[in-house]
Image (cartoon, rainbow over all chains, first blue to last red):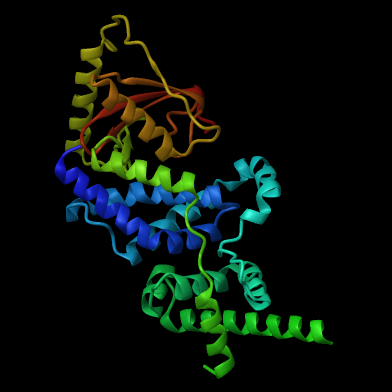
Length: 177
Length: 158
């Protein structure tokens, strides 16, 4: 590999180091399991490389990366039916490893509940929440990505938080009640 | 936003998204190395040129595509009835996508370093690469002018 190739490779790997978690969290929404999300991310890398050809292959900015990821995730979702039976077995065996958000030994009960409940949000709310909290995008960038208005993006985000809060309150009340 | 939602927001921000698995990271890094070294042809656009006129090309491009195909075909003996080059078998996942088939086919051509225009794909025609109704074959032209013929085990359903 030439020096230039090494440089490019290093730059993209650094970019991946910095952004893999947030990209994977977003991809995970559209996939049955972590492995599929990783496959979607790899497909996105190839497409992003192609798109960056005109910019000397510098690593992409995040809005583009999420846009490509979204497109590939949607495409992947359409083909999901063919793989569903096979993947169901994988999900059953690996369900404890399939959480999007990394469990930590010192997790509070609230953290455990939040991780579970985020994954259970309706898709439209979850998508905005994931993008806002973990992906580093602004409401304007999220709106552009999802082809919705800024107000709609902000409303969905707020509604997602309210749903989570309601659920937390309910669970705490039941635990103490 | 009221304080309880702000507090919730802060709690969410403390949760850490799961990173790539060791295997996933290794695959991504290997892929990046291949892309940087030009070993992977990122196929995003191809044109079908065996099901009548090319889709979306002007008449000049159509003529150019036909000339390329003819040139490749004659060079490899397609049209002159000579013995065809041995098809290259492509191993594939159970249900490949269009981009997977194309990436494998074009990468094989690059690896072989010669014009092997016929690539056999042991499976049904994938969505987006359908040839004429009942046909098992489709030729594709990518932006670099490379032509490749894909031969699937099962014909198009349309």
